[in-house]
Image (cartoon, rainbow, N blue to C red):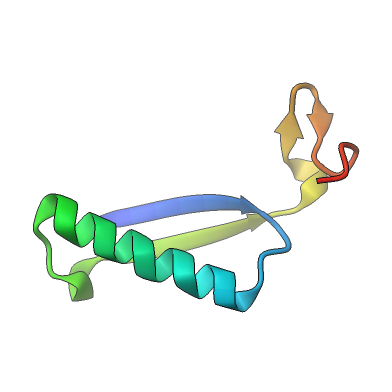
Length: 63
């Protein structure tokens, strides 16, 4: 059973998350030959202040 864990800076819409789940599921199923129903996708929303980019938080960078 393929499992993908994806970390995203918070703020994505529910529709965007659905699209990520759908497309990652399709890609993994195709790449490893697994049935789509066996693919698991876990999305982790990370608060902007907990995501570092170049020594600063994404919140401080306005992302």
